[in-house]
Length: 250
Length: 166
Image 1 (spheres, rainbow over the protein chains, first blue to last red):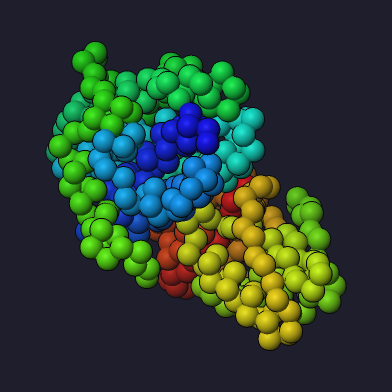
Image 2 (tube, rainbow over the protein chains, first blue to last red):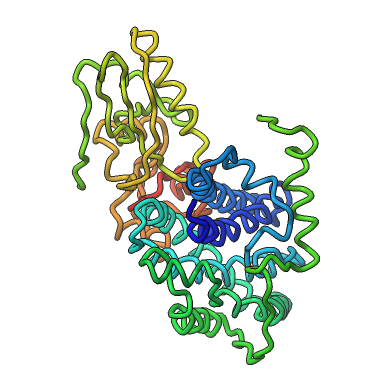
């Protein structure tokens, strides 16, 4: 099997899986009915995309592994999502800041992935980007509403942005699988997205009367499978049913 | 309007027209434009369908429903989900749009008009109850992945708007 391609697909899919799990956990806990529905819709889109990626990964693995095995049965160190998406819902400002900081990246990434020489990946990207444009719109709106809202909402949104900022740089780190796939015209060179990303983020933050953090202290590790302490709890919930009742289906 | 490349055996059309979206029962899958291929090969019907939204749970049900509708008509079938080219709301037929309106769901506007409505708060979506365009968006996300929530400011009725997807 093409180990690099397999690993590359997981690198894309795990981000959406973990963020989807975070957003899905808000079902019934959103601050208002409409926001609750929005968060779970976003989660549903992400899970849908993830399914296409894992189905493809399972095909490449070419052994007995299924999409569900790949999604549900790996140990923590084998998940290669960025640290940003696993950060907790400290308050609604954190939820939206996390979403926004990922959405801007996600949109830029999928724009490029549509040009991939791998026809399955370009098709998934082409399908997903339509959904992600809605996500980006939704999270950007909330950055503005809270940032340019009351004194309290402004303060909380600024705190969330400042706190999550340290996880943004990792989005642009290349793994070995990344480099191999870029060389083959399949993968996206994430390093080239960085400047546009920070420009776009700054644009929204400024329109929201928020300050762009100046900190250059960044955290990394997720792409190598070294996660923050939150990851274990997410996986415990995500994997419980499959571990307790192997092969169960709804 | 984008034209759809379809390859559907005439004989199968009446069977497929009876299969509908489980969440929007008035809309047949043919009018929704999700069926790309339906051909008979060596006695087996090969069907290709394209998902509307990636996570739409209706797709699995639609696949099963097609299988059983064909079975009743005496055909074995194989269903394949294909991603490219991606489905767009342009593929909903005029008859499908009318069915949506009659059912109380405002049909998708064109891409620019859709942006005007969802981003710039313009009032272009027609209330399926009273026909007024004095309507406002309540939420970009609605009861299913494909819809947004609206309310009519004249008759006060809330309703779903089928979002434009391109």
